[in-house]
Length: 361
Image (cartoon, rainbow, N blue to C red; front, side):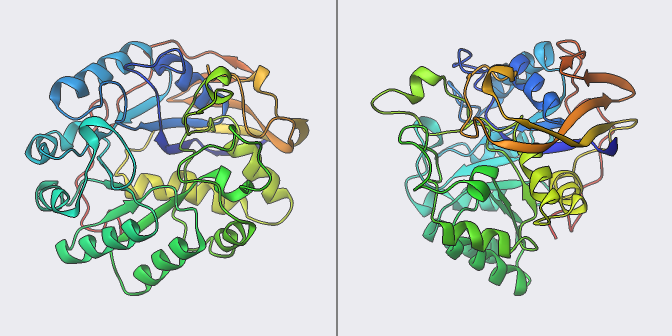
């Protein structure tokens, strides 16, 4: 067995509150443990969105009752809530800013609405951007103007990864993540409906550019965004893929093929997320993996509530056999052993780290 540090997923859509038929804190943390992930950071675009003290408490109370792995909850930037979310920073995973398509209270229609958040949200706290192409360039400009670190979510295009690379070479405080579906899928090879995701699947040239710039990528994150099979088969399917249970076997398979190393997987799914998002150490926490077992990915065998995967039938090599969380076996040989509510809030239930001036350096 290969023993590794337990992993972190910094980009997860839990769907609670508001859409628990897709997922909730119980099912999503079971899926995380099955995927070798012991900490998830939850996105705020729920129904209602998490954008003030009341909605943050709503999400955290549900997590406290149901979560089986460790967690934190992002707050969302809106047009008028900059001072509110800045005050919530110590309780939150960070601030999520939707600079492209989103809805309701989290819609930021123009760049003048970004300014109060860049001015007021603490520089020691993570700020994550949903930014694509030109808005990604604009976000980097804001980072430079206000001298504050930013993290770019789900980079998917050649032009984007090269822009992040150029920003880093100039010493700007920018980090980024890439999702497994943008590493392994292209728009031409994925069936209609089930290909619907944001950012959209790209070309093989874009995929190749991500692999060619692994050193630029700080984190691998799933952007786990579950919808039911019926919703994905509808005339206007919602965007999003499940990913918690498939990211590690996909990466382990790539490692067996020499495309990436185990050390790089740990760096981008544990070491860098811990540094960038100022996460505490989890004592006596690790995963055990059978590197040699080969099998096919089957949605029917997964814990996520959505019931499908874009990687159905893919043959992979490497399987999570055991997850130990804080000295207790949380998952073993396909069985969830952690109890609902046993997960801890990494912002409130651990000794707090001092804010680092190079948290995103």
